[in-house]
Image 1 (cartoon, rainbow, N blue to C red):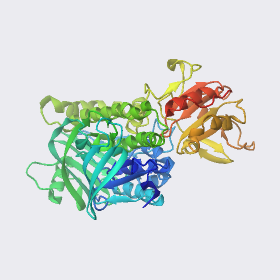
Image 2 (cartoon, rainbow, N blue to C red):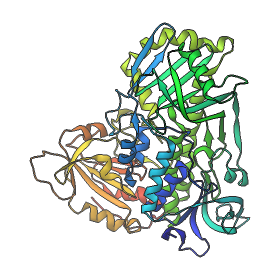
Image 3 (cartoon, one colour):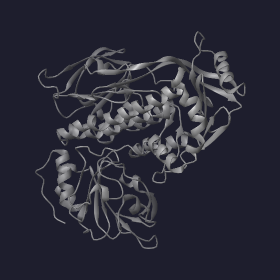
Image 4 (cartoon, rainbow, N blue to C red):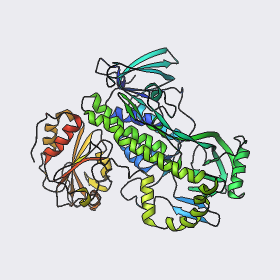
Length: 560
């Protein structure tokens, strides 16, 4: 077993018990491992899943997975979709995908990759960290260690197929065990929403006659048909509404293709065919005491715009570092509670938006189908020709626009301009990316800040050489969790100073909303969001922010 199995606190066997080893649980395990937290990850399945319900990875997810060194492998394995062909009654509208509004990220395409491949790559990373996924282990029950204190930890009763019942005492339990979450049920957390009336069919198949590396959509009065360029285990993923009283067979798939494409496509060699029902449901709370929900255990919705798995992975990466710090006694109660406060609004927005779009795409009743059958053909060509609209759409779909503005654990220094007068990311926004020079090599800014812990970015001129040492001395509790960098304007022809990031093009300063002649400080959270920023060279303000965040306000003050 890995070192992740033993907790230093005798009251607990582990800091975190993760229930569920899908993409959400695996991403959470990756972050906990990077922080050195003790955890175990269990799954009721005897082996990894072979059904690839989730098939797309968004740019923001690839950014968020950077600290674990798997983003490049995922990007290389995925198949980019460069166009959407919207097959309207009178014309086929060809829309370039992610060709605008994506300049500030290294990952500028929606990538299609089977969930099985995503899980495989994350599992390989965990194996390299000596983390074992415990399969054939099913949660039976959860009980509080102290009935009077919901935050005192939980005891989990686990049914193991190889050796009977086991009990695990955990400081925190995270349910990443899907829509039918046992964790959610045992913790008594409400689950609200409804189901869609239709039964849907999806299949991984070969299709003759479809333009490759293109998403195809066929909206008609009968509903819709989607084709996605999957690549493997088959070239295409086909999704549509299953005709009533028809079996899930190749003949049914061909009949659907004939109906929606007027016989233009030939469907063959199915690798997998499945039927399913869809719902739009959400937990009322993502946290109850020491129990947390993430991914499909917290929210389920239609597959519109490929948001589900990506939202779950980002749930995990918002939560993991907070629990890891909490296990070390380095998280204020406010920081732990911020998971629900930050992620539930994101989940609510995804559920609401996909519900509205999905109803427009699938309704076959009276006036409800008019937006699809009449309005879409009239409006879509003009709307898709508007770069500004497409840019906002792609940034929203890619999840680059997700933010935590207004969170209680992000803040600005008193010397900052009011938000309405400021440029660049506000506290709570994702840190934008740019090419920079570091140690005479071209690098990406996000890569240089993708470390387990907090990054302090000292921007502009005039910072004392010993600023990193001062911060380290003032924050000894964050030893190993504090990455201090300086960003300056510069030329690639001038030799590097140790530890200096040079912005030769000026894009980093521009995207951060900074002047290279004005000093400013940013604290970047472990999940890649700006937690704090202030103008001037006042190091003590960053120290105070990090002390408040970690609940360690007795540290030594520093001066500029």
